[in-house]
Length: 366
Ligand code: SAH
Ligand code: SF4
Image (cartoon, rainbow, N blue to C red; front, side):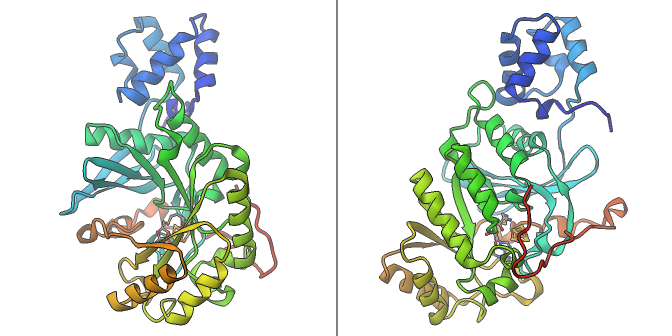
């Protein structure tokens, strides 16, 4: 590992500063960003519009190494899943989902996750560390390079909780959105959160216009404390208030994700509770048939899923059942990493100290 800053962590202003510091014109910033983010050329030696000296200065000042794909699988439906290794050995998963001609990249924001939802393979694997903005954005660059074509959408729904790493996540979005960098339209980004209220507020305040999805999975605190442990810090009432506030500030509807687990959260009464809770929220509800069978959280029956959906629809909500992608390659987050032999360097995986904080305690984000 090199001590140099990663080139992927340099934002546009940082590049301008870098080149002007070398006595170069500022348009060089646009040139290097085009190589990295548009042409997917990561080796300064191949950046042919720079002279020899400038290429050498780039290589000497910054680390251009990018995440390495150590494992990849392709499902029958075209979904691909990658296991990436960062320069310090941290491992993350990404997925590339194909819908018709369009590709969606599912990116990780942390290596592992400290929240520890019991049904989630990532949660079960513990927490390693936050990713930097450059690491998150470079997951996308590496996937585009591997796909050999542009990817149209990004969902921050891989490993980790984006709003326990808010600053890096928003900086990664800015990099991928910046017209001189990757230039992906802001409406093509979705951040999925387990319900970290200060993160939702920070996203609204950022004015970025990214789409927001909230993993609700339960409408009452007792059940949600079990399914999504950060609920003990940010109870359902506060979460829904934050969603309403987000809508008021941004004018954007929120996607509510609700994974259905057999006999846990999928009864008629659970559906009615959800309807009551979301009264007044302009929500699009995504019903997710549980993926895998982590810790005995089994998938609901198709009949129960359809019944749940019909209660929501009768109450006037838009509610869709998410089509399963990549089922034959365990495409749910954390499942590919689980197939790897354990890495001894990472064996002492750290759980977040406040993984189950006291009921009324507020956990700072970031
Ligand atoms: N930490 C964020 C984003 C990553 S998880 C969050 O929780 O929203 C992305 C989505 O996958 C979440 O909605 C999560 O609840 C869901 N998920 C994780 N494991 C799952 C499983 N086994 N079955 C169904 N959905 C699952
Ligand atoms: Fe973390 Fe999301 Fe998995 Fe929960 S569902 S453990 S918040 S990645």
